[in-house]
Length: 72
Image (cartoon, rainbow, N blue to C red; front, side, top):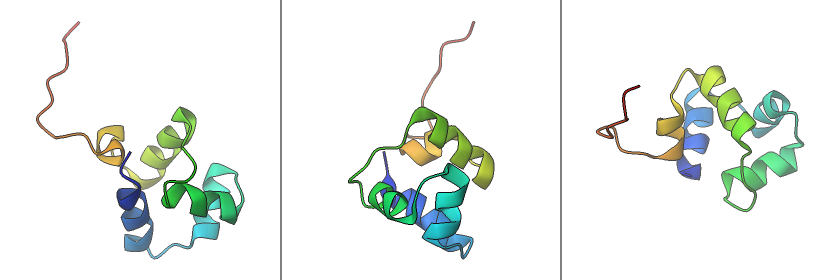
């Protein structure tokens, strides 16, 4: 997980940690731990952040753009 990206997304939108903590329904302190890599995001929280920021999970997770996914 690229915690730096989570912080950059928040700062680009000029949001506080408290505001994002509300989105994830956690305390500001817990959100700070997430941004600093001390605590981990749950899968549901990754989805919430993707929807909130309008980005893919690949971006938040720091995966390369050129990944190939199996077709079904």
